[in-house]
Image 1 (cartoon, rainbow, N blue to C red):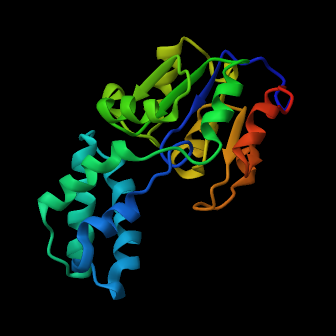
Image 2: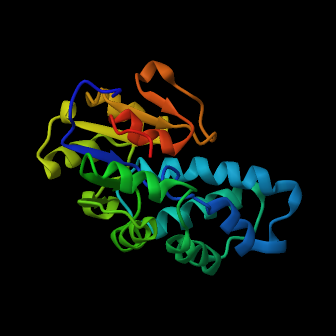
Length: 226
């Protein structure tokens, strides 16, 4: 077992960690030929940066995060922004499914510890995406419920209060050092797992266990391989 504690909960980021966060593919599909190949990569890169920026301000619903980031990115690259396209991107979010092996690993892990989701989705999407995972979650905490998005530290404070735990009583799992592991470390969560999906750099100094195969997750909790 990788951890010195028997945690009260294993807490998970969802989108990008368990659910394949397909927003770039979705934007390409929705915008179609209106997104010229020569600016597409830059548009998607800037759009991601603007989503992060929008998440760090005053709370706004996730459909507004999507819309504002697309509007700002469109302006940056000289593309006409259309509100109906932003709405179409947002409405496709609940159709996204898990990465391979996630459902099996979660159900295996649930034999040892209760599972919790803390996600930057609104409540309706959080519930539907969790259903796509086909695994037993004790609690699902949405950004809408918290009134804040990760990486804001108050998101983790809300989670501690909601679960009735201290930072040393959980293991937090995420594929994002930026959204999750940096603030988790600041908030005193020592037991962390980084699921390296390849879209962020490894920040090993944050003190997490790094895995590249979700099947290794239950093993970190002391469960034998099936």
